[in-house]
Image 1 (cartoon, one colour):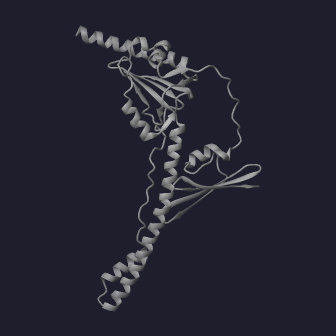
Image 2 (cartoon, helix red, strand yellow):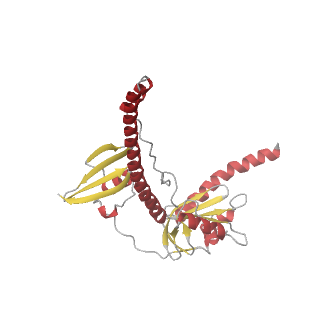
Image 3 (tube, helix red, strand yellow):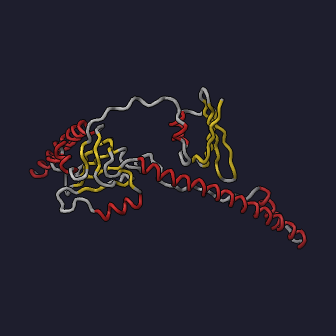
Length: 290
């Protein structure tokens, strides 16, 4: 009983200590820039680092992630520390956003394309066929059903072609997002993060072979509030385009077969930007003068 009580006391003391240490690390590192010494993959899985081992990084595992997700951070890159998170046996040292695939990131290129449904006319003809015995009339009805079926098949082929285009664009956008989404070091310990690692000096010691603090640089001025259409590219989602251009002045929606197509119009003082989306993915846009 005494041992159990002692463990409960240690656990109760440990949680505030971890929170306090995390706040200290965040205050010291977040917002600073580091120079990275190794390739880092474009995923929230990042690079696993095991201090104290003969080989702190399992490089074959890192190579698999680089091959699967691409390289988001290269040796010599100066990257902003965007978050430091302390967990029971892990410190996350997030760079440039922490890697693509975190909550809210759409990492799947899948676009659902259901088959074109039977029309009411086709269903009515099938019911009519069931109640018809005359051979000539049955042939006539079957011919009509076959024509409607071929129409559905052509519609399915058109939908699949447009979905394939949207899927390729979305895949390219995900690759681009991975390249821009940063990465992270996951500094892992066997049972718990040791006290000596919960200080800025201790954390930098664990990372010393892989990052250096960058020299201070002047901060750029505030970004322009004007919409920047040069940031548009195929594969962006509706929300991402709205984040660049603001709320659209007009939105029209239609269906092409089983695909949902929408057109958003954005207007500023001197130009109009028209953007077309298929299943929420940008496939084309145009910019005109007002």
